[in-house]
Length: 455
Ligand SMILES: *Cc1c(COP(=O)(O)O)cnc(C)c1O
Image (cartoon, rainbow, N blue to C red; front, side, top):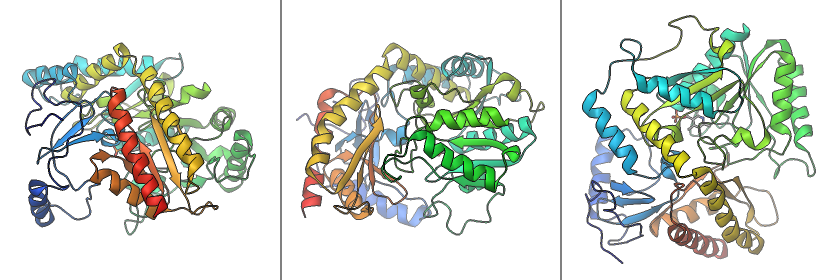
């Protein structure tokens, strides 16, 4: 294997797309940084990997000891186009040299307008749309709720079991899971109501998407009142909650109910958006057209950017000055997003996501059949997961998921866990990953899974 020097990431092609382990993991320089970190960084901020990153390219992360890791997490679905894509690097460099900040609310610029044009064209539905840009997914979700309340004159927000929408006060309230996101951080924003999600593995067997939607609607009508609902907010494929794909018919039935009852249907596509699931947006798989769409993560090619895109008349219900923020739609982030979107379009990364999904299914489905500790593989496109359980039951096995993930990390493969019980391993590779590297990463995951579940 080619040896990789650290600090080589400044030239395209400088980092070979190979896994190279040069030291034990973590190596000496990472251990040094871990010691400095424990004195300097608030312990409430944690990291999945014990390794410190020095450079990255494509689907490879290089740590400070020169180990090259296969990235099957994309920084949580952010570097969808890959790390250090030349078009993105050039666009960012050029924009940094021209100007880094004026504040769009003070001195507007073309990049912001163009990102909004792209979002209006790419998000589902051919109705008139406008967009507003922000910095993070949580901020986009907060603003979607503001817009929905303003547009309807109503207050209630309906969210779902296992939902994740962020860590600010309002979005903590929207998020389902207590630990680690909410514990001790209340009181939370009011007028949030939680409905049951369609979770085919854990729902009564044979429950259809329409029936699961009816279960949620019955609760909303009885506990909230249809006329009080400002919006129903849902991840079309849940992210942190465990890559839960609702049964077919669930999302369309909820969208229909919203339309019939004057409520806004808001899709949180922060994790599922931008080619990740094989379409530009996960709603498209069922022909669902949301009134509002929130985006972040994959939109910015690694730069912090987020957006709300919605029906023009709904967006126009907010008075001038009612939306914004100092950094929202930062010009450097907009330049990165435009280059990233062009890369997705030119590289046909939606199709790449589908091929990656098929490869993952082809490798992991036999493992699911072989090992009773895996309840199922599920997902759409390049958003795939394994859910671990105590064999013969649906009892979540978070210890197994944690041990398997740690074993992958020790072998230089970055996988992430998720799920309400922490018992899911999720795969979010960059969509530009080579077949060989994906195959090698999956091989490591398969070996680790066999070893842990046998032991
Ligand atoms: C990550 C995520 C968020 C929050 O985004 P941040 O940028 O971390 O604030 C919101 N919704 C979903 C579905 C997410 O996956």
